[in-house]
Amino acid sequence: MFNGTSSAITATSLLKTSTGSVSQGTETMKVENVSKPATSKDNTRDSSEDLLDLKGKVESRLLSMWNNVKFGWTVKIKTNFSKESPVWLLGRCYHRKLSPTGSLESSTEIGTEATAHEQMEQIYGEGIEGFKSDFISKIWMTYRREFPTMSGSSFTTDCGWGCMLRSGQMMLAQALVCHFLGRSWRWSEKPIQNGREFQEDCLHRMIIKWFGDKSSVNSPLSIHQMVTLGEALGKKPGDWYGPASVAHCLKSVMVEASKENYEFDKLEVYVAQDSTIYIQDVYTHCRLPNGCWKSLILLVPVKLGTERLNPIYGPCLTSLLTLDFCIGIIGGRPKHSLYFVGYQDDRLIHLDPHYCQEMVDVWQPNFSLQTFHCRSPRKMPISKMDPSCCIGFYLQTHHDFETFVNVINTFLTPQGVSSSNEYPMFTLHSGSRSTVMNPPNIRYSIYESEHNWAAPNLQDSDTDMESEEFVLL
Image (cartoon, rainbow, N blue to C red; front, side):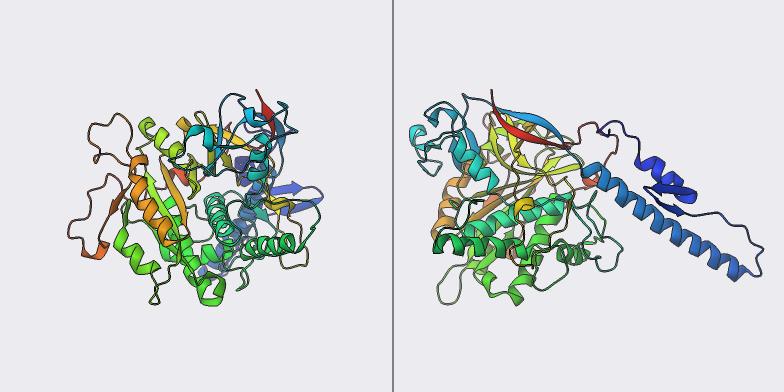
């Protein structure tokens, strides 16, 4: 039986055997050190290079096998949700007390949206069943295996290195769901009953197809495309990404996608520079010559501490998750990327990409949607969160953007800080970055050191390799 701290197979032992032999089932791979009399220096060099090349391929195969074992199984545990505290999920509030019979099987379908200025009694929208439906409707991107080889590499899986890219895909998918289907849309496994449900199903599948795991113009937001465009950031297939790098990668894939897909013509992605949103730059990109306004996906990479999250920012992060235009936070804990979508008390609710599933051919008619939706919410203490993260917002209209500008500052500064302008999570500037003579003297660069997202510690006892159930304390 495998677990996070002990295993009959370890990556180290597997890799050490790459110069001998390794068995997997009935298949054996063998690399031998062969001593041959060299006829020339060239022949010796060629033999050494061939051996090293073969050794590298074996090690790559073994690492892929290890990752499939590490991320391809589950152990059931339970996630507890308090009966007394509200649960927030991207601007919506759910409370156990709104379930009239006091059970998971019943809830009140009120559907009230939460905003920063409503009274608390108006904020509480649906019962716990509403939370379950909302959570399951989020598009879940995980590790995949057996997909077409990535250009310039031999990778047929992103197990072990693609978690931050998958988290970025989830946040982008949430923005696209809000854009094409609306924040109130819910996925249902029941048979389609009418024309509206048929249209929603087509849009739902269209969004997932854009993220299909292959290099294709029909899947412009695939991990293959992200890795290809990531080369401009100095990345190559198999490299790990930090939240800021993924934010810029998401902008790049959307720019490229808009060249071939008219559906993206009215969408703009803006990545904050130096933890600052330059309002004039947003207007330049979103305001069209005819006076129309592009919907905005706003990504803000931040670093909220040095080695660990500064605890003064915890309440700021959770307050952002109560805003209806927030599309989540990508980050995680050190060496483990996660997509945060909500919270209860001092614990963040998240979707975890660290589960290896087979590639789904999304271009087949009526492909299965089951593996793109997670039924197991997970929670993590906010104190364990890595300080590097990227906060996302979707602002559909010009009015939404103006509202964001007017209200967001009240959520950015930690309580108890003497100067209101000294330590905000990020800032807004009324001008354009190109005309600012002296950019803000920020504490950290958005191009964060990514050592925390590098090669995972295979002995980490907290690997989150479990599925979970809805349970109320």
